[in-house]
Image (cartoon, rainbow, N blue to C red; front, top):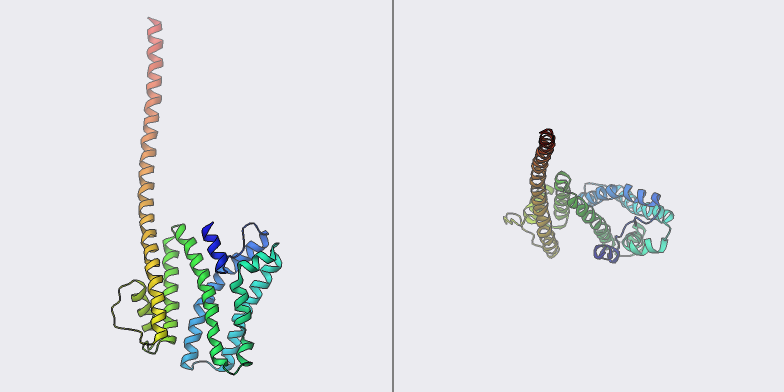
Length: 262
């Protein structure tokens, strides 16, 4: 209940299981596309910062990302019964649609600064990724868990390469993110700008929690496998004891018939 309340407060409540089956189904359909969208946003940011894409392509991609949120929010809103509750519980989507509309970047003098509002999109999708990650960890799917952790490292690394001048390439950014998120901290790649250090601080906090969750997940999987083996052995022992009990029962009946015969 507390987790649901936090998701509602942060505007990432999703679709309630009490809603219509169509709304729940479409809500699940949009989960992984949004994860891929989170992976693409920092990559696009890096390409833009290095001048690898034309302004026309940048604008086309910005509109595509924004329209994805419009389509998702509009479609699911039309399918749910309690539309007001859904929109209030997913106010992050509404904020993205209103604040991150590419049209705003052309109607104000500081249009370039307004492009930073794409961070709202990244924040909204990252919230979804943490929800998906918690669901994965709960089910002890180690392969998918490691894949999710790898996605977070890649996203953070590419984003850091675009944000931090001291990180020269996405490869260096991914290496820095891996070292940072595992709390190793070699110090060979270090952010020097204020924004880079703020981002590094956030990543360190995420890394502490993620590393603890991964450790707990591995422990749960190992303990779970040992418990499974023990339960199998106990099952075999109980089966043998049951067979012995049945044999003793048959022997007792034979002895009773023998005593009666005498």
